[in-house]
Length: 403
Image (cartoon, rainbow, N blue to C red; front, side, top):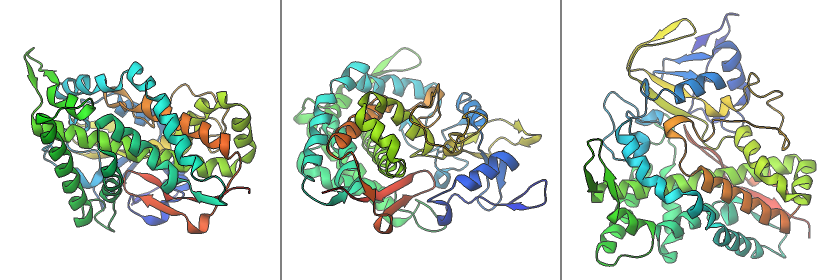
């Protein structure tokens, strides 16, 4: 707990359920009253202003990812994984160069016809009905199927894989995602991806999992080698989980936010050219992944306080997107807002590799939605929220559409 200059207590708990639907008032207080916030209960510091989140993102040597980026995982020892989001330079650069080949501008652009066909198929199945679940029946299925297509997950396995991914984000009070249900789901996904890779050793296919088996990485000393099975498995898990979860949450927020702003939704339906800009505003306005952790490798001085090396610090990207110091009238959703930059995809060396794919999926999904359903209302009473220390959005979002 932090006491402000006015002597009033200020507490932000990343696991507190009461903040899940609308954390913006408490984040505003953090920005205004405690831009460097201390939580003794969970032993972390937090920065909430845009400039501070950006500065930390651009200094990966001081603000390390190797000790974890999720509060529940962070500790003195570096994580024993080859996933590049938990790596610092130079290892991170080695892995990033490898994975970036899968997300080239050309390769992502070539996916648009398949993504559009998938969206059309899912939405056409809802025609003639009074409503449907915009997340469960559409928003969660689009990214799950797209990344499954890229990796080569068999169609028959995709529903089960998506369910396992959802279960990985199960939250238990007091312990977050480090619980038996989440750990079991992660082990199941690890085993599945590993089995798929082993199968492709003898039966390679034209997919990304097969590519991982033949990919070579250049080590810092110039030598080249192929990925181990464990490295390939970790990459597969990262791509499946990261490529599914955040886009599903983005589309859920699109369903809620546009229903709350029908005039702007009508503009998008009438002029689809506005949709790319609307996607950026949605990402700023409601970040699907609003909290990212770092570990300080050296003492850091912020706002007159010195943080010792080995401190946990949370970057509140969701708060940074509402920082009035960067975005005038930041609590107002505006599809015409000019955005030079936001930090929802991160920044610096850990900028989201799948950002172009996420933007493409979001744009096409909204284009196809508005083409068929230019109006809808949200059934908030029966909506369900998915909330962890690092992910925030809807898991179920029933909507009604005009008959």
